[in-house]
Image (cartoon, rainbow, N blue to C red; front, side):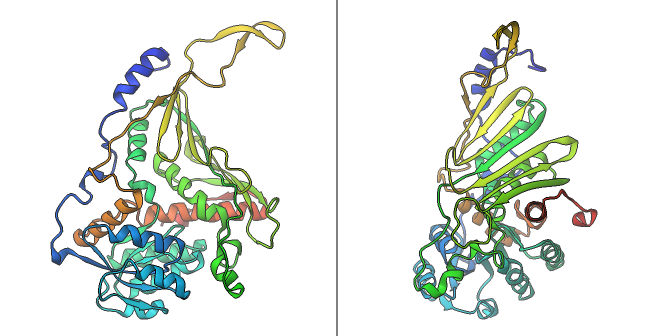
Length: 407
């Protein structure tokens, strides 16, 4: 089945069979949480930032074997209370993260604070000998990114970045079929993360507006590119085993004119080695297809949605007819017929969400000394790509990857 000689019927029937196997990707998902955890293996975790993301993740962590929430920290009382609801008996509540990382009973921290605090808090935690799970994007700017890389590598501690889709079996299956050349030569990625929402949270009292809706302000946030598109940038990096070489883009505040500083729509085009392009967009005024990645290859297109992926074979025969009054012109098909669902198996019977598997791997890395699959190097590549895209949009220029980013 090489070249473009395979018929669509054979492609569909063979694809349905070949795409139904167990994930074998580049990371051993089947090893996560496979063993019973003894009392001595329990990781005592502190959560810094128990707002929407941190508090929601605390609920997931509570149900995981081998991890115990023993401290929570937040400056907003309601957030702190929400996190402590999921903490273990005897857990401590803090309003100053520096006191939490001084706690000698805490083995590791999960940092889910506004973006501008990610790198400073992670650096402080590393200096105190704490293993770190840091939400994406891992830094506010490129200098912070490079400083964090150096600190992590000197520390020998487990450091994981919250690109949790790397722990989703669906994407491991996608990585596998790419390696098996089912899509042919891949030339383009089309990525979108669209919503129909103002992206705000209710504020009570009004004085906490900038604390609660920090995503709206450039002082604290990298905007849509950092908060939403960063996931897909990381996925493309992984699928291509590379990082962008240059990027350009455009954005604006064109719909939600409510005092925000960050764009309510962003579009960037990343170029990778060998000319592969990745278009990445996020808008807040239309949710059609919401989250989606399309991988365009010479043999097939793969359409990835939240919890499924569909494979479309390319047409293998040119069809002729009347096009715009010209008899015998080639008819180009917009789509290539019925889709083949890409099926995949979970790594265990639990069928947990990707964030849960990511935390199980983090705990295992602490116990074994193994490096996380979503670690400081892959986190660095995604973060720098985000920051270059934001700079390209702000300056209306091309931004290029510099050699020092690879050191």
